[in-house]
Image (cartoon, rainbow, N blue to C red; front, side, top):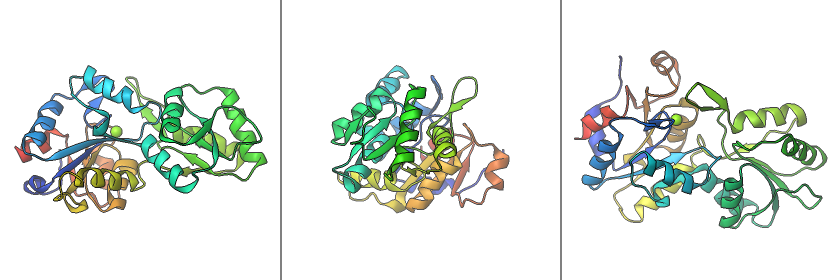
Length: 275
Ligand SMILES: [Mg+2]
């Protein structure tokens, strides 16, 4: 397998931002090198955060999942598209009441962060937030279509991913649900989450508070998907590492126009380089 990047320079990375599915595990299967890699980063006094676009679950579900896979984690170890969505809305539309089309946990996390949310259609609604809704019903599609058709209101989507990996292949993710809505209403959402750079900025800020040596220049975004993970790292001005342990094939990686710093077989290569 062809690989790319000067692996000696991986030793200079102080903050690793890891995508999860396809990067550190696949579904319910932790990759065999993941635990050792995370422990090695900590042992060297360096840092990592998990950065996920999946807006179907709250951060608690991720902490639980990591525990189940044998990785100790707390909510502070995560940067999620749900956190980025609430930060964006609190900054841009702090007073508006939003209809939330998403899972129960998505709605709860937005509400807990201070966003005004409802799941009832009414004339008072002033915006729509769409998430990766694994509890999707036709009623919600109907409500959102009506709101977007009858009113000129902000339409925010937590993440642009078209598909989410499963054990057998893929299911439609937030980007595909928005595709249906766009076909029906002609309205396009404003997407949060990767590939927008905000999640990387949050991450660097959070870690720099405890380690002033961390900067965008020594932050590495690691992921298996070019149009979210890699595009996000590039737009933030961080270093990027595409791993071929998930969605992207070697052929696609080398055919792409993205200026990727590292193309590696998987995260075990990072462990080998920094150990
Ligand atoms: Mg992934």
